[in-house]
Image (cartoon, rainbow, N blue to C red; front, side, top):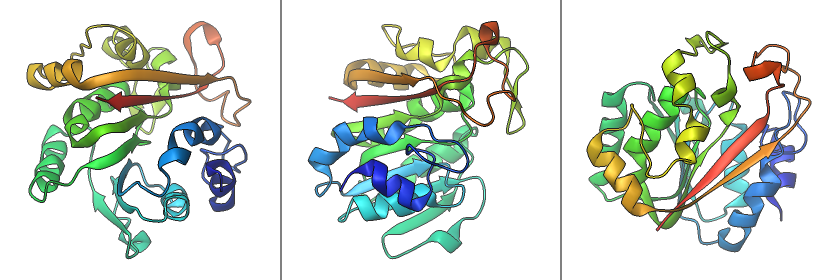
Length: 232
């Protein structure tokens, strides 16, 4: 079983075929996922949408419990192995509450995948807050990093790209050492610098159906970009 075929089956845009535009992330992910497919115990995905990727994860990882986080109530997608919660990743108090909820039973994740708002501020704030929930050797994934190249004022889900976000975009954040972000506090920044083993960025040029909607730097077409960050 490969993650791409499962992604296509369930209609998630992580695969190489999707009605909403294929990002081709799945073949890249499979290199990390396939050796641990039957060992993964806990997954968290931010940004549930219609549940396509939740269903793909359930099939691909047979022994996994899945947590889905979304702005809206997606409890209709809940199954014995998948539970959804309402969370706004742009609100620090929501992220802190989720960390507290997980810390009480000492719940840690084999990987967390951020497929939420794709807003630069949200991506980095969420990463800083939730990375501690990753198991040693586990992965944190930030998807759709093409937003790092948006022009000033570009609108995505009602969030307008600011000059501060352009100056401190997430791709720049992932490639600068030591790690530093205006949206991650000192304690969390120190934790990241002490506990990140490596960062891999996957960047693919795609003919996405919404390429003309998003205006990027130098009028370059928006790209399918994701990342895998491994914890020590």
